[in-house]
Length: 323
Image (cartoon, rainbow, N blue to C red; front, top):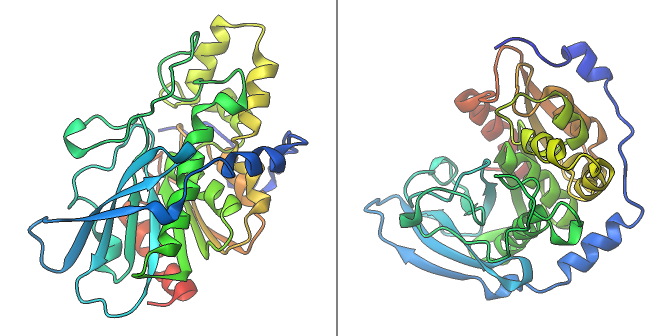
């Protein structure tokens, strides 16, 4: 686990001029106008065998109104609208089993977990398919799916799903609409940044070692086990498409979107992270449009702060949203 990117001083000084498409706001306005009514969300009770947390299987219209699965956890004794944490998942992860992720509900928050369309390895947990065709010429993974055009890209759909989940949380009767936070680890951290930028009303953002930030640099410096390597593999085959690829990805780059977010944010960044290099995370941090703080884990790789950071998040979030 060597230090393969900039040290902390270098990361603090790294403030790149990123390529921002002239029609970025129009692109996302068109995308988010394209169906997916959060009022049509469905929540079905699930018997987990647990007595202190009530769980519901959530189905929420995402990109194009397509159904996206999730779990909603509520403290069993709640008697008033609650602050809510909307959580997005890491690369390759599905929503899992209903009883797996209970931290936020145990701490007194409503907790809405979004499945990642087409990701996850357990069909038994009711994962969400991605019904869009797998474009020809891509490489295994998700980062080059539809990379010829931002309108066709996989992450256009996944970011839209993330915005819809935040909107649906704000409309749930058990949730205080003014106290909704978004969070996630790695891919989920990038989605949290994007949702914070694109969903008015989000009250707090907690990106944890975020993916999808300063993607061009991530492709250059991330390790071979990072999803950024998918772009390397793609461009090793399609040698004449680099400009096109990075133009498409600029519409989906969370560091490009970050100045549009205004809610308070708590980042986590690991200095030995070879999956989401720390300089790329700091690019998003420096560009973030709202008040922000960061916890730096100097000796950790992509696992970041894990449970120690979760405790930091809880303390910080209670200060922002209240218990």
